[in-house]
Length: 472
Image 1 (tube, one colour):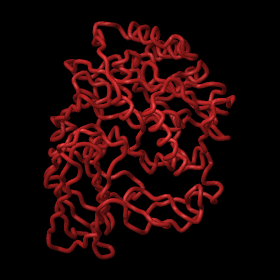
Image 2 (spheres, rainbow, N blue to C red):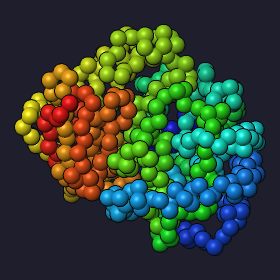
Image 3 (cartoon, rainbow, N blue to C red):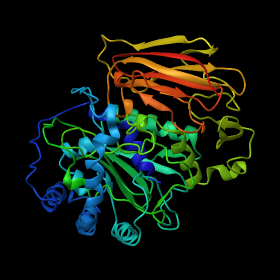
Image 4 (spheres, one colour):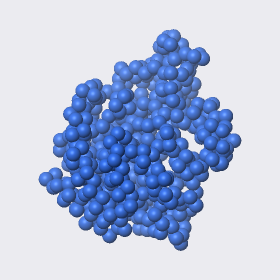
């Protein structure tokens, strides 16, 4: 599991908001090889930059014959997207970027695997072999199989220290560490003298190495900058980066593919003109959920499985957790709960922030929630949350109609939105919505309780929806 990247993903927006500088736009007449070389020249002093460069050049050669698949997917995008094709994203220019955007603007994204990973020679060779031997697999970045990359776990805990990192960077990194400690059995210790440790630096771009390599490992947290967005459709250079690994290397412990994973690419990743380059195949309403900054329950669950944290509790189903909860790895008598649920056994509505339990009947009722301050330009480190339950009688279903959304529209709903959980799997991330293009969408639940989570970290947002008992 790329625990280092999980940490980078959590803090990128805050860190990249601390400073900007002017960098010339990328030369889109450059070849892929030239862009890899340009990024390598920036990163060449890093321990595994040369190994990663060699891997990327080989990967580009391997994928030359497979670009037709991605081209066809992009050609079909307008039909698949339909009503969502023309969603307009708001650009909050003075604020932070995604990791991919930061690395693009730092001119290092083409010298990193999947835009943010530094690989050893061994890791690169394993992935190439896997790709050459397997065609049917998936695109999401997940855990790397412990049988494929042995000794990559931080089994004795993670030691870290800082080098040239700002006070703000240190604060938010420590907060990310605290979050992971609270939901896993992994211990983090700030220790500059440890033999094996992460060194957090302010360098070129945002990236990390894969797993535990031993000795000093760099986790780079760079700043973003502005770049013109006038190019059209899919970045050809990224086609070999969005490859599909098999379960030999890309392992998910049998867990559900979650569009809300913090490790999932955004819908416009590698886009030349910020049109969509990837969409949920089976449920297009998840398009704005992609690229989320919010830790998904399946992210937490996978990390716990990867590190064997639940073994001490007797496994995933050893406790009496309700609503998809799992034993808490630091207190087996209590549960770690999916979003929208709380309490020792996940039987309660979260009490933090605003919210209420609203009883649905056969007459439509309206819920309108406003959060934040439209006059404020302060980006909060964490989201403010309001938790509602729309609840009907046992065995009933709830029908929810989105009437409107007002606020900032961004990939992954990074600044605010609403999450509506109507699916059968209560662990699964709900639909995250932050665009008025979703007005008129009708969602019908599988269960008699629908958690509705309104969240905000910048400016203001308002959601209005109607709900009632639906047909069974």
